[in-house]
Amino acid sequence: MSSIPIVRTPADLRERLSQARSNGARVALAPTMGALHRGHLSLIELARAHAAVVVASVFVNPTQFGPQEDFASYPRDEAGDVAHLARAGCDLVYAPTPAAMYPPGFSTKVEVAGVSAPLEGSFRPHHFAGVATVVAKLLIQAAPDVAVFGEKDFQQLQVIRRLALDLDLPVEILGAQIVRDPDGLALSSRNAYLNPDERRVAPALNRALRLAAADLVSGAKVEDVESRSRAMIEEAGFDQVDYLEVRRPDDLSRLGPGPIEGPARILTAARIGRTRLIDNIAV
Ligand code: PAF
Image 1 (cartoon, rainbow, N blue to C red):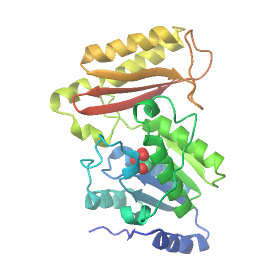
Image 2: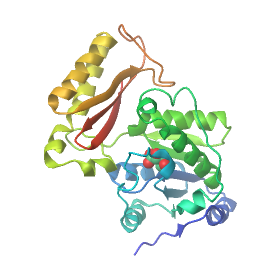
Image 3: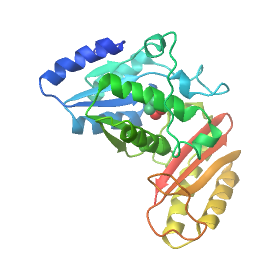
Image 4: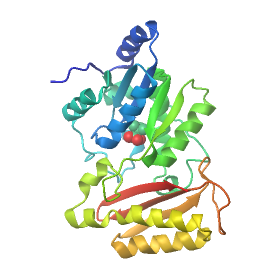
């Protein structure tokens, strides 16, 4: 049995946290959709380093899934998640019911224009509005001093930074480094969908990104790097590369077609079998 308390409504969350705050404690929030792996636990570690009280939310948010996506089959294991969180040193779990998050009559949508539009935004048109809406709610409900998000969803992290800035939310948004298996595959709850053959092919995504970053540093042209890397991923056995693009890290605007002159981020999404994997790398 877990030794950490679970709260299920915004009112219970507020009450718990106001007790902590009245003792002067800083609060960190780590939003998750559960199915926790080592990547999530690194979010808890980072949160711990910045606050005395660490809250993790576990909520599979229906509004960020498209109609053909994996909301129904998304892995769920609340008991396992709570046990992991207890071991990682989390103090409180916020696991609201869908009805507590989206009561009847719910009508508000938060849209972050610009940074939400390209890349994931063009393949999953309603995804970032769903993410921004639920994250805005979580940040308002928990009112944390800091909130941590994984860099694996790098575009999501930049959308959330923009959201917090634009809405004057008094929270520091922290990005946690990507956690990888030894062969380079970024940890993801969706890796559970890969069959053994697909799992063997999957690290090609990160290999292509590392090569692309090295090529850009040595002065290669963005357009050449992008097309070479896409071809590499498909030759390795992926069925389709949705995108592989070199972008400015802050607003994700396009770079190239020539060599880069400053910092960049390479972001990719590719499909293998029924699984869609994403990854990115700093340059
Ligand atoms: O990254 C995730 O797991 C989700 O998109 C988040 C931030 C918890 C919002 O549902």
